[in-house]
Length: 640
Image 1 (cartoon, rainbow, N blue to C red):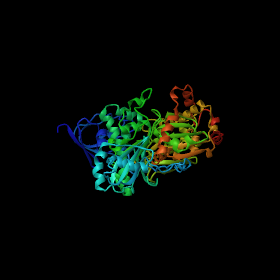
Image 2 (image 1 turned 180 degrees about the vertical axis):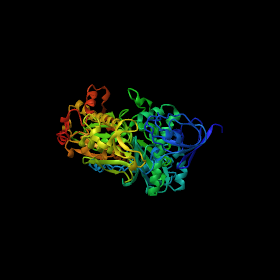
Image 3 (image 1 turned 120 degrees about the vertical axis):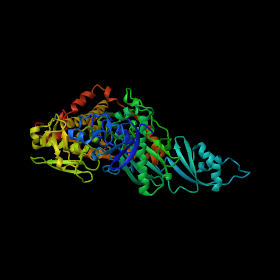
Image 4 (image 1 turned 60 degrees about the horizontal axis):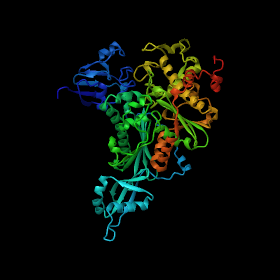
């Protein structure tokens, strides 16, 4: 066919056929080759660079490449367009890791709190074995009515409904098995749907997937609905990152047309299917035994998963297509579980407050407790919830991807080779550090940036305004390739890709703004409630990033408030914990819908105090040092 070009991506030797004029980024996505990228294809971040070994590519700027790289055939995949058959080499640093190299998954919040709420094991989809008596002249009700009558004895006070397909199959199925069948029923509020009728007793296996769909990472747990036990977990990076590190860039891509919208939907559905296949293979189960999926994520992620128009989420007044989503057939969006399996998405609150926050507020106990607590979820956005059983107020601050390896020149996701923690010692700033996987360092994860800034402040390389002191930096101070002042962490000869790893002045500024936004959001929300940090019984830190923070360092830079450490607690992936609770108990699922109704969203952009609080928080740790007494005491004598 004229205009069709064949592209081979190495080192995988993956081949894909695309039309001439297609960008290399789109071609790689269709081939299942996930490329790194933070700018959403705008040619700004330079992380999707590939090398053309054979063939012709047009388009693309050369500003981000050296003369030697241009001569070697390097181009940006987001800008280069296919003009012939190609052989393309994808360097390791350009790959978005899609397999088991995701960093350590934080421990799940202990859901034993469900026992305190006296939640019985009552999964959203359950299996009930029935032995139906055959029809007689004296009892000649319909097959469906006989089924419903038998189910009513096992599931009382319920009204049943059944779709056309299982109704068609029911008569032959009952007679083939002499009435010995398993009814698969799904919770739909006041109704119970008879999803499927299976021959014989299949109650021995009723599994579900609890999924947390993060902007950066997707995590799935395989759960046995018979006893509530987790059989295992799997995680991978969200492949939508190829279209941008943050949700705004992804929404912009999806808004370009139906094909682009489908790109995002297929990417996340593909991630979920890969994780399901991994769990199936690892634990030797059958996809047909997975009856349903419960999913949480921010509002944009759930819109993109379902293929809902998301463009209005980025435009004032930031209205989504739907926040209270009914159950859907998982197969409708391409999820490969039981052919009749159900997808339950947890409820969202607003365009920027999603089901992940609702699930976290519930699973952590914040929404049900007597004392006032604060939940801070640190990610691409920084969400803050304050409340108890009587009231719930929430806000969202746009932190950007700085804490997830984005926006910083040497930042990377928490995967193999990422420096996760470090410390400086002595007059020469001798460095000790650890990497994920204990391999050669390839870049800095978000937790490492928090450690590094705290250490640079401690040794006097960084001042309170966030400026790097070249003189104090000594041999580690210099100029990066981008022309900015840089503090060198790892020299090129010791780094995995023979490229130096450091932090530039621009990196510091990005992190300063991100941490300032989160802290300011917390302060403004407290102020609106006439409260202070001292009035909180506890501060709960949620999210994969938060779980691996060194708390004193997070306080030192002003990311978290300066309160006694016993009042600060990590709760891990509270969103996934809530998703699992919803899967295993119908009341919990309904309770979370009520939590969403109770949550009052506070719009920070319209608050007259937010900008003042944000500017004040864009210092280390804060303009008002009195808010951080323990930090100021540790830095006494250094101009603090």
